[in-house]
Length: 170
Ligand code: GDP
Ligand code: MG
Image 1: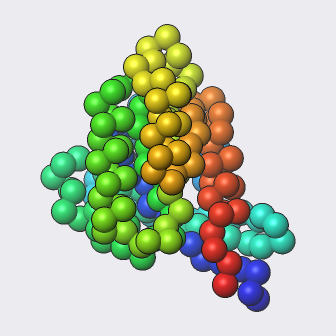
Image 2 (image 1 turned 60 degrees about the vertical axis):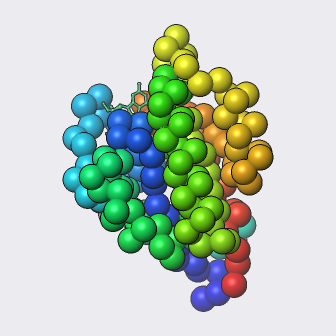
């Protein structure tokens, strides 16, 4: 029926930021301290219900390594939503996240719902990116922002539910 929606979602961000861990927390409710690194990309699907609608996410978890960069457009092309992930303990990963945002703004679907995830927020004592800085950046660029932890599950479901709510309805 018209209350069912399929939505392609892509995760982008630096290697090690926690993209796979966020997806596995969301889809399987699990966390691994030594998550295997992704080769190319991995596919997952998960359905959520919001506002009397059912959204089936078709999730592409990409590898952040530079050598796969040329493949990235295959994953974000036609995507209804993107989660750009950085690690709050790494300024480099935040800089890399901004590059992904720029690329999506130039090449992505103009109606794409974009979320910025500052992951590993359980590692407060190693923090190198403030929430204020990231929130300011997100506000300026039309993204919504959460700090997440795949380890403790903080804000992980929330980010996917928020995306589901913001998706344009047919
Ligand atoms: P990816 O390369 O972006 O897919 O990153 P991974 O999901 O493979 O995670 C890289 C490493 O960071 C793994 O050792 C994970 O266990 C760890 N990790 C991922 N998310 C978190 C988190 O929220 N908190 C902590 N403490 N570690 C995390
Ligand atoms: Mg991965």
